[in-house]
Amino acid sequence: MEGVIYRPCGESALLLEFGFQITPQINAQVRHACSVIEQKALQGVLEVVGAYASLLVVYDPLVCSYTHLKAELENLELGMPSSPKEQVSLVSIPTCYTLGLDLEFVSAHTHLSPEEVISKHSGRDYLVYMLGFLPGFAYLGGLDPSLAVPRLAQPRAEVAPGSVGIAHTQTEDLSAQIPGGLANHWQNTA
Image 1: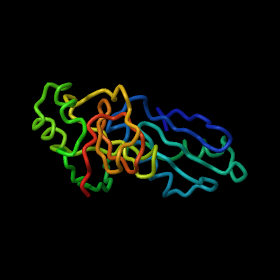
Image 2: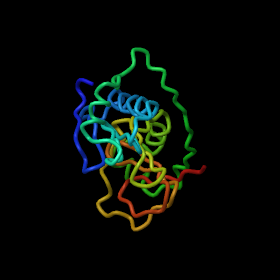
Image 3: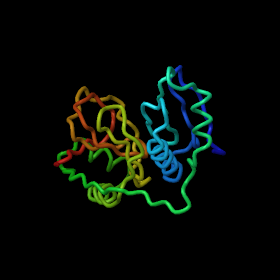
Image 4: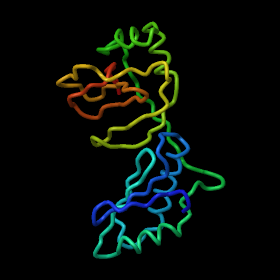
């Protein structure tokens, strides 16, 4: 496909880059390409892993070569379909903002009242750009730009699973107890 950059990643993976920005449009291309490759069930392909603007195709080099796989992928229609019919699921994450550790910090940093922070954070839908870092850890985009805050200067030794945090222009729902430097760890009540 034109516009996609193909790069070898070691001896058993091929990286497809669709762009170098984090946008819903590029991420939609990544998700579509993942779906096409998975449905095609190409011989030797073991796994397809999508990210913000790229996807990794892991393959068995004893079954197919990089050159052969790249040629097969180039022949697929990996661009956006003319009429996208992607199935999406809306997942609600019940969140208790009053249990958060950093509501006052976010309020002071953004010059918004705590009520405005809560309203802006809870009042929109977010796009899951990718899963990673930990099992079930979703990188969520679509944060109101007025809520962007830096990482904490001093990371916490432990952050409870189910905590909801903000880092720069993204928000996350932590799936496990980990050390963390994200601000405003509100508690997911699910």
